[in-house]
Image 1 (tube, rainbow, N blue to C red):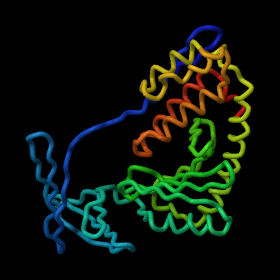
Image 2 (image 1 turned 180 degrees about the horizontal axis):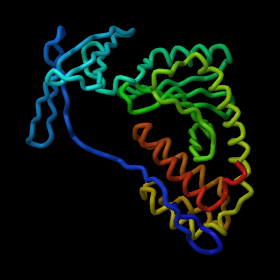
Image 3 (image 1 turned 30 degrees about the horizontal axis):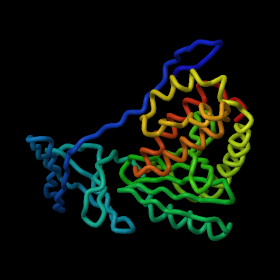
Image 4 (image 1 turned 180 degrees about the vertical axis):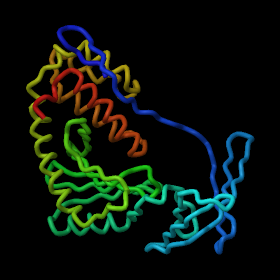
Length: 287
């Protein structure tokens, strides 16, 4: 991460988000009673077929099955998760399946009890549930294919759009799908993140008193990490009126990210980049 300090940039090592694109195609045909599984992976003009044996099948709710698999008669330490006979993922045997249906039921029950608005966004094998109370909220995420942990993150509603803070020091609930994972305390954890959202709301409003002028150069530099279609013209208020607050900048960027026709994981990645920019110029210290 690059941080603007004492009129110059200081570089600190940091992890970078990677976006992997591909057109691989995978299909799975299942035959039980220690018969073979056939996994076909197609990439360009190359096809690879792998045979697995089904050692044991565990039936789960909502049409899920967990199948312990072997390869050439040897234990693989993996299992295949299927739903209605369709492959979901091949994961380690210690992976704890938490069906999206259970998470959604829990969240809907809490929303009804506390009179909150709720929006459910299913994407592939992932679930995103957005809870709203006044102008603050919580996003609950889960997946059944190992791509997303069970987590709760603070969000903020602003003029009909959603802002995701995702600052590294801002507390969230993050739980890997290990054997100890359950959702019995999910309602308490959501309440805890709502408190974080309220704190974030206060900080967001305080940005209205922070002028953009001292941060123009570092912002321009940091904006190079964000696709142009999101940042083009964001600072026009400053150039036309010779005055603009950081809140106005943040609002414009957030609105463009949320309204763009992309999947929610892309939105989350973009919000992280924007928030990294704000953290780098030192305006999140009060959070």
